[in-house]
Image 1 (cartoon, helix red, strand yellow):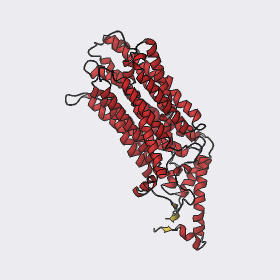
Image 2: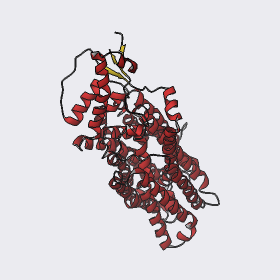
Image 3: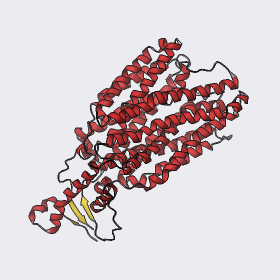
Image 4: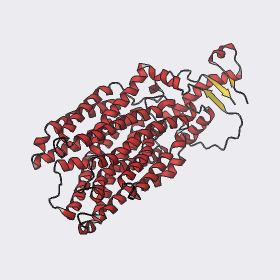
Length: 537
């Protein structure tokens, strides 16, 4: 059946019923979006936060569990009781590399085929890859570390897909008054995932305490059980959340502005936010609207304008700068705790192995409880009241100062037990202001500041920039930390982190303040006569 198109110029050349209907379409679109923007908080919003949040819980657990698991792997498969630099780098950097790929790929796919169609696919990838790691073995032709690197890359692709999908689904279903808190609540699950990884490690190590101590120090077989349980249990929350992800509805904004199905979008809004249940629509004629369509030429046109391009630049560089430090610390906290002598066991042999693993687990629990988790929830309180931009600026400013102190005063702080405690306090303060600061806001703003047809793609680009920072940090940390002796260069790495935090202050000025505004107001496009015509097919 052929399409009948009405161009905007034909409006003034008569007043047919079809043209009158076209004149109403723009108003219908704005009315449908207003229903979402002004919706009262409901259980549906809670469901969205929980379903999206469980994914981030799983992501963080899987990413940061390797921080402890790499130490366990060193005892079992490393020479001298630890992995060499390349092995440690491989198991830690493979996930960020996969995540970068997943963020770009799934970000684009979510704008092309839909949020709903891709939501759950990334979780399936994570579950399979996590299970694969736990079952990995060693053979004469291949070392187990190589197998883990491959599985962790695949897992990273799934984790990468979770970032743009969860961010966009949370933002597009949220009303403008609570959008910041909904997105923060979703992202805050990352802190609990980090905490859970340390807690599971502590429980598993404690459960195998007697076996570890009884093992010969040269071959701690019991530790092999520990890292497999620690990694493998990461797929449990993903399995629980999978059904809900596969059954979550498509966002009305995608249906309206990308599928261009006005009738279906209005129906979805009524069912989701008004509770109006309607039966199946068997009509042949479907009202579709002509709105700006995503193409490579349109992408260049939109972001080629400085007012739009600077926002993408600002979100991308801010995330890049932040992740230099966030993952530089997060994936190496066990190394830093050891470097400053925090909880270093005095005993050697198999008892020393148990003590070291126990201390590392406890140390990571302290860092999560004292800094990571509170930072997310303080952001939750202030993000829709104070705004995203002030929180990000405050975070980058404080982080610049704390890294300067931790770096330049490193020798004095770590010279005495009291100074070590002060260093740990500053470390926790750093974790707090990463999350009550740019780690949260760099996730929120890209999910708000772009047009619907590019929202997921642009979020994926911003997030991938962050993972590029994580890769740079991890490679740099691995290559630099032992210059001058074991862990002797750590203080200079902290000073480098301070420089990147300083650049984040300047990139923050490129992003808009998004609190209290609709996604359409933030899109950088005129919403009057956004609907250019109609097609009846």
